[in-house]
Amino acid sequence: MKLDTAVFSVLKDKIQLINMEEGGIYLVGPIRLPVNLEGETVVFQWYSWLKQDEVTDDYEAVIERLSSANLAEYQQSSVLVYGDFEGADEALIRMHSICHTGDIFGSKRCDCGFQLKQSMQRIVDHGAGALFYLANHEGRGIGLFSKAMAYVLQENGYDTVEANEKLGFVDDSRNYEDAIAVLGTLREKPVTLMTNNPKKVDAIEKAGLKIAGRTSIWGDRSEFNENYLKTKVVRSGHLLDEEEEIHAKR
Ligand SMILES: [Zn+2]
Image 1 (cartoon, helix red, strand yellow):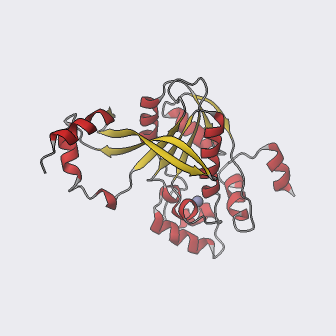
Image 2 (cartoon, rainbow, N blue to C red; image 1 turned 90 degrees about the vertical axis):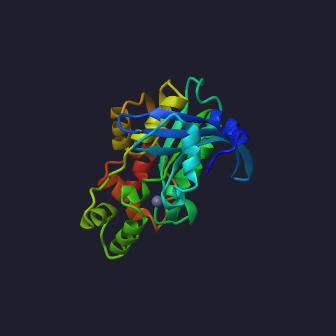
Image 3 (cartoon, rainbow, N blue to C red; image 1 turned 180 degrees about the vertical axis):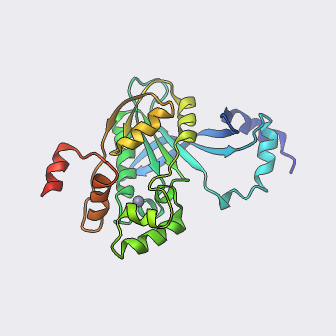
């Protein structure tokens, strides 16, 4: 397909190429995205990205290939940015792993849907920040179909870590490299990470990100996710807040 000149002139300023050690990432945005957050309309700036093994700065050719690339068969990640993310002295970020059941259906087997909404709200309350929605992280990187299998095992007495291991997966195979590269183009100053997972802080720090601090994000505890949350603490080293710790010991 040959691209219309007027169309290209609109798009070319919204695309950038981030070169990586291998291949690179095309980043498109910012795009104004008004969001309904607990009944209030909040305007975020939205970006999406596409990782490719071979890249070119001929964006016209990149756009012309899209219609035959079948991208809907794959997952692309994105980021919601709020406030003066580049310039603010302090910014809150969340590296959110996609959870089809929790984020979309509101499943109570995990706390992902709650964490997603809560982190968006906290970014807005804080005044500046970004929510990275990592689409290749389903089921801690095992994929949706395998996650369904793991849920079957969990219904038969295996905990979340065991279930993944019994299916031949390492417990946590998530990679943050692409998101960190995107973050690096949006902001140079350190960020505060919203997570209960110290391993995530280590992994992200090792990958070169400047971290100013960590803040935890617990909530939506129920009879349905009690074991799931307990496993996160006991098996995966997640840190509880002091108050939460008291609750857990009961
Ligand atoms: Zn989940």
